[in-house]
Image (cartoon, rainbow, N blue to C red; front, side, top):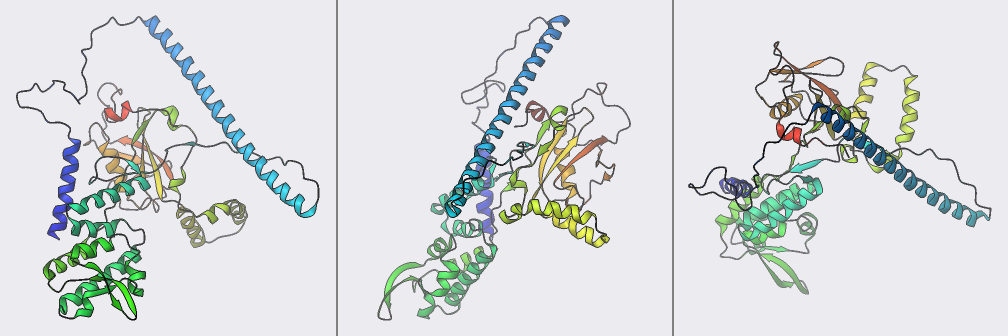
Length: 439
């Protein structure tokens, strides 16, 4: 276990070192620029424009932004309508062609279809990061591929520990991974307890147990090779078969060590990136939608969505017990995997972040606090109904009914007004600089 922990800590340290940038000599000026660093420019003083010039410039800028927004909205709407209309016409033509061929009837005329506008998404997707491979923030499929490439690159440095991590991290089915680990441990235990028994030191690769439990799992072959097994073609029955063979003079101590490392290894799981951003009041007030990554529904459930909507209307007319209503609510909440949390501040700016639906309410407070200019500020978070959330609340977001999205109100516990007459910024400067229009 110590070897496994040292391996992980070493990779984290290397990743942090790469992110730190180039080094500096002790005799260099602390503010001096250098190749590879951000260049600094001396800002010369200029005369402040008059009040009339400021008003004229602000009005021109507002007209320009309004014109761009109108053009963008109209072009996006037109593109969506054209794409959906084209798809509808193609489907109708194909259906009409099939019907006419089957029955010999003339093709029916086009049907009138109501087109839905594409929603303005509040967030483009769900993103992850992994400290071992660096500071990149990527979608789940891409970050998992990066982790896999990183672990396979480490085989040359430490094939034993790397193979254990590959086996635990690069396979989707936890049940199949557990079955593979148990089978490999059985192989090793047989050799360690009876090293002189030749049949235990051979694993036939066409054996049913090996083919079903070990061969399909990524990293299993690398583990056997790192443990000292070698491939060999040996006589079997009336022909020959390929075997994994552990040499009679193999290192039993290393074999036992890797067996323990395999059992104790935990998968490298990427961390959910909060995707924190600050929104202007006009952005936060928009009617927004959630991307498909937030949902945990199958293709069949999506097809049944229209039918379920009609059933909901019918159920509203029926008398239901409290338990029946709660079960219906829980079924509805299980459709979501992630939650979009927005926190509105007194200055009108809204902080937005992504959470897993099973995370605790306390994690929302931690997220807000780490993005404040003064993290030690005492504050409350209020739900749209006026309910006050507790900072130490360990209730999952689903049970707190904050899923799939919620707008909370930030309220300071300090009775006195903030310095600067209420014009003080609440959020970190880097968040305020990144304010941009939602795509």
